[in-house]
Image 1: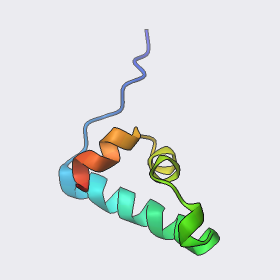
Image 2: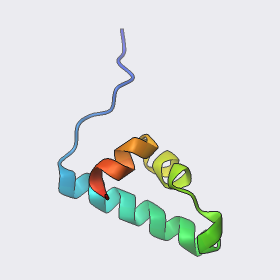
Image 3: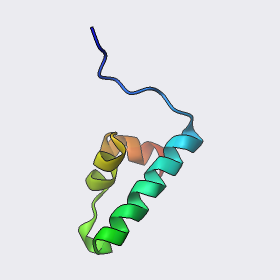
Length: 55
């Protein structure tokens, strides 16, 4: 049976992934049209996960 949970990555790696995803979204859309949900979805984590790395 295959698990749907993601591999736990080091905090520095996850923070970098979030920043890269956010930057990409901000280049595609206006700042006011990018949500935390959008960033989380792009990384493949929950919105709560984003807040875990960025208070």
